[in-house]
Length: 359
Image (cartoon, rainbow, N blue to C red; front, side, top):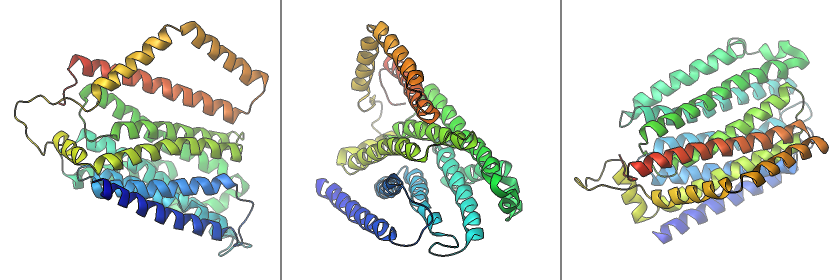
């Protein structure tokens, strides 16, 4: 199994380095504007996430559909740089085609992002149901949300050209509403996990938690465009910060799925192995609950220091007059961590009362 894991890792790295070589070669071709170095870094991270999620899908027999959806989203995201090579003075096409491609890219990205999140929620609600049914329900929901938010762009292919220079003022509020739907569904997913606490697969809940942070960071970026306080280079740093944890979780999931214990545990929690009346405890549930307790006790005993640090941080933001983008991203990141910590603490309290037994 170790050789199998190393084999997958070597293949991933070989393909990833080939993709990076293509990115480096593309910098020599005509494109509009100066592309920030971090843009290429984020494109490379997106492609790495595509490779990791695809490899996980190959090894996960129970949630392959979920990871296929994730890999499709990351694959499309890793080629979003193509827009930079479309235009009158660019590699191919013209300015009209550039605007049409830009709108298509935004519509497809928003559809796939919502579909990826909603599918997990629907699958959790319809446990052990037919995958085709889950796909149909998710598609209808996602398509309805997209049609409601972007109906002028769907009914009139040239709608963006009628907006002139104000096209961002029309497009980005619609993007905000569309992506906010994913956040709402993720909150609902968290509520259902807290109430039912049924495990679909290892690392799935962790992955959805990180996607929650990723979406919130995305929403702030959209707001920065709407209210004109975007700083492109800073936005790229926060995007990278939100993508790296996803890569780490997918890598851990891959390593776990490639072990005999991992395959046995996945079969066990998905009802493929029957151990009769033997109570089965959740993996690492005791140790994770202990860590949460330690963190909670540590901060509760230092509440004065924590409040003082928070106050100092707020004063520092105002005194140094940091940009709204930095302030909102840091505040949102801290709030997400706090919300997730409260949720995890409540969830592990319930698990402790239930003896950490798989339902």
